[in-house]
Image (cartoon, rainbow, N blue to C red; front, top):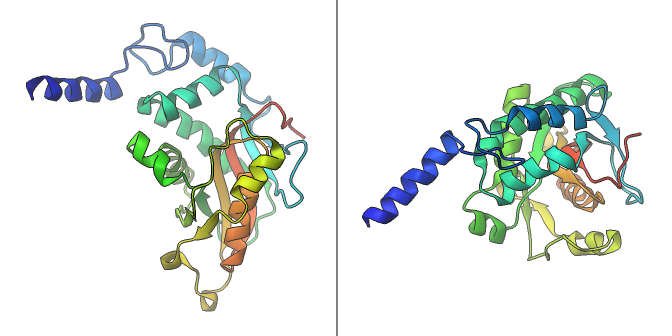
Length: 238
């Protein structure tokens, strides 16, 4: 019991005081070493967050804004955060995503009240394996930092397969009809229309965002656009 307790304490200390860079692994008292931090900034889109479109794009693909390509330091940090238990990277990644959300509000033709930021849902299996929902947590922190309301209204239905390794067509078929707005979250039409800004960590083919938009519209909502931290190289900036 004592050993298990010490292991938990050590893991908690690592979350607060990282011992290595989340991108390159060199010993570091910071989450990201100075060298990788410089490379991270250099790897983002010049001029700030940019509008991208997957190629090929699903027919119902909405506009999406991202900070940079899913490559280099940004790609390594995202993988370390989600699958490498480097939750100490959340604040840095959330700051980048907050810039993306702010850019959407400033550049998109949004009339009326600010849209509700809606995180793309993770599967129950992924949440159980990780012990938390890193994407939803990241989106929540970024939205609060950007001064935007956030609500995790989407739920996955059924058990879609892991999207990794699937073709664009396979990804679209895999998630088609796989999302819904949780019944307790359904919008009362008497309150007027509600407008969603979908948010994810990475956009690849766009199929997940398209399915999320379908579910939002099926519940009476409107999707104004989408945002993500990164886009795969197949989605160049427009």
